[in-house]
Every structure is written in C-alpha cells, then in structure tokens.
Length: 284
Image 1 (tube, helix red, strand yellow):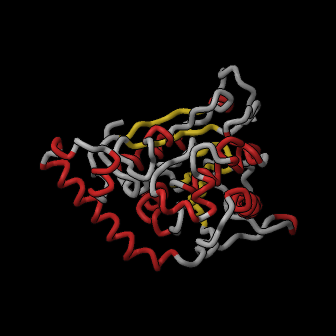
Image 2 (cartoon, helix red, strand yellow):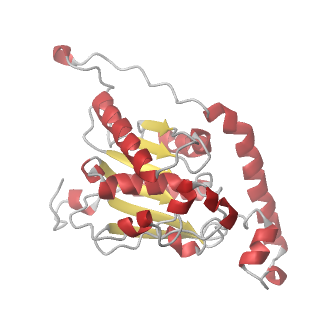
Image 3 (cartoon, helix red, strand yellow):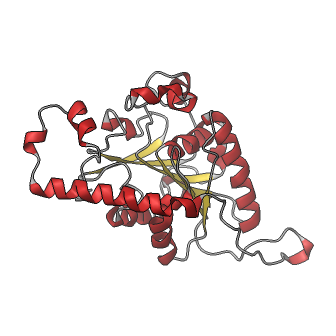
C-alpha cells in the first residue's frame, strides 16, 4: 500500500540513521516532514483529553436477570491500545473512522505510563478484554495496537491464551523483532524489553502452534522509531500473519493517516481464514 506522507520528524536522527540520503530530499518530502511535525503538535494538544479512561457506554439489562450487556451489532468489538508514554487520544481520528463505517463497538484502553513490564500489561489487557466480552455479549474482539500497544496485545494473544479472545490483531509500527532506536531510552525497563534479543522478544520468537489469532502488521519505510523498519513486520512461521508496507509516513502518522484507516477497516471487515467457508481451517 502506498501512502504519501511525511519523513521522520527529527532530521538529526534521520541524518544519523540514514547518512548520505539527505541530498535526495525533495521539496515534497520536506513538506511531508512538516506534516509529520504538525501531527506531533496536534497530538500534544489532544494528549490531556486522553489521560483518563473513557467512560463505558450504558448497557441494557439482559433478559433473565443476567449481567447487563450492550445491544449486539455485527462484528466483534474493536479494542484500541496506544503506544509507549501515550494514551487513547492518539486514536481520535481512527476511532471516528471505524465508528462511521459499520457502527462498530469500540473501546480505547489506557495503560499506565509507569508500566515497566510488557507481560504484566498483557495480563491487564486480558482482564479488560474479558470485561468487554462480558459487557457486549461477544465471544471475541479485534485489537488495533500502535507501537508498544501492538507488542502488549501480541504477547497476550500468543503467550497468555488470548488467541481464544482476539480474532484479529492489527499492529501499527510495532517492534515485533525489537528496535535499536533511541539508545539512551534503554534505561527504562520496558524499552529494554523492546530491544532485539531481549528475553521477551526471544519468547515471542518461540514456536506457537495452534495460535488462532490473525495478525496484520503495518510497517512504514520512513518509521524512525523502528530500526530497522522491517522489525514492524510480523514474521513467525506458526502465526497466521500478513504485513502491509506503508510508504511516505512516519511513526506517529500510522494511527492518523486516512489511507491507513481505510486499510484497517478492510482488514477488520474480512473474516480470518478459519472463519471463511471452505477455507480448509477449523473455525473457532
């Protein structure tokens, strides 16, 4: 998929990571860099609006005196999970796009910026998903995770039995194989877990036979947070995985760009192979 967008938003970092390429920058790419900076500025303005958890929609009493549930609509609920030192405000535009087409039930989750362990965050995600399934009456959910959020959701689905609940996991700029970007940030324990060769990254590389979740990894050729950029691909022989290459935009633009949103909607509208008639795979 080709998306015209922005260069990495810090040119000094770009110069260090890709020496010699600055001479190839065109006016269009420089304009795209300004767009990426504008996305960053806009997100900083929206950031305070996402500091608290979103309010749960009102549920209707269930028949027979059971737990209250939301009225069912077509398709499973969609759970949005943000990245490192971020919050649910990053999904304002994507949420609006997903809700507009098909009336999907959407939940944006916050996890604490003080989170220091991906495994612990994955366990908490699992509890949130169980509550969402109980509240909506759905057996499964779809998850869209940006950056670290995608890694947390993958650990839940692949290592904690979450494949029973997660039908499709879409990751946006997630370091599936670890990233070498921003070496000075390695003092934070969760950043160390995102380094290539960390125990957690090696755990995700282990065999995962029978995992029922479908994975779709969006990765961008101009993502300066993913080093190398291909680390945002889901490459595992046991996983049902597809990868979508995005060109011309940076890390922050992935959950914002309208063309990416269109492709995410297409992914969520397509049933995984195991749920398609005649697919040859057992339906869940």
